[in-house]
Length: 388
Image 1: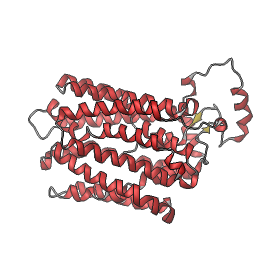
Image 2: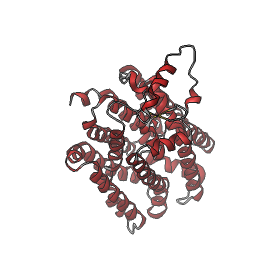
Image 3: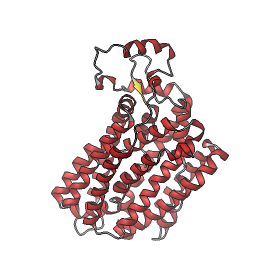
Image 4: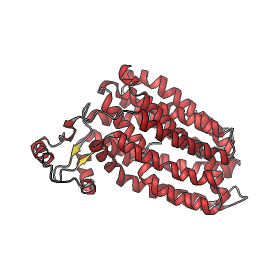
């Protein structure tokens, strides 16, 4: 437990950041509907622009995540965590000030621009921070606890929304986002950076070349020249069958999740006339079940069953809960489907643990065999499918 207790400042930073991000989710549907289709429970435009937003953010994140992982290995996890945690504040501040149509469009555009860098990067960098400081044999439990912290923040954030007005929700969210940035800069120690991290692990024959390159002080590193290309990421995927399989599973799993969550709240509003309070209740049930599962069940089940079996369980229940939502015939069915999060939350921590073990206990980089770019496998995995 000594290693895990050393991550307490990371856990608190992640809790505050997720609290700020999650507490606006139950309210954003009503804000969007009020801005685009006032007085109506059905609005196809809201679904279309939400889908467009998710698509653009996903494409941007696919490009940015490997670069973020690369830069974090160069400059440290803390330095790179500062950027997305700070950028998260600005879209929230817009809606904290006003939620009229013009301010909503300003929020919408700024959210797309910032989320291409922020969406998933905080979680991916947190995973890399954990991998830097936790031995390989305990990573599955550590990743489960990290996800449990996120679920706990999800519960607290959505529960607080239940008792706040829409305006107060965005104001409190902005304040919590600012607090997370300040806490992280003051208390979080930087991750231990091993000087050997720049040594390739796929193409070991390049080690001397990389060392010689690092010894040339007169050459300034040009950041965007180190940005991995599509060819580089494909080379990384081909380097390990297990890693490529995990990336494929992650991509399709998260493709389904993003499609579901981009339209679910609008569907429930149109079919059962749910509002902010019902959305919050539904999310609290999901979050409580997920928190119990990841903080209590997963640390026990992961060593006993293994990540592969636990991943199969998680994927099965993930599919089942989507089916229940799609055939919901009464208002209580979504609440029952939300309870499935007790089991489907296993999938993401298991995938991350499997990938992390493929690259060694302390190494987070792989080199491209031709261009000597450095790619973070965990960040490529996050790019292939952003976590919930």
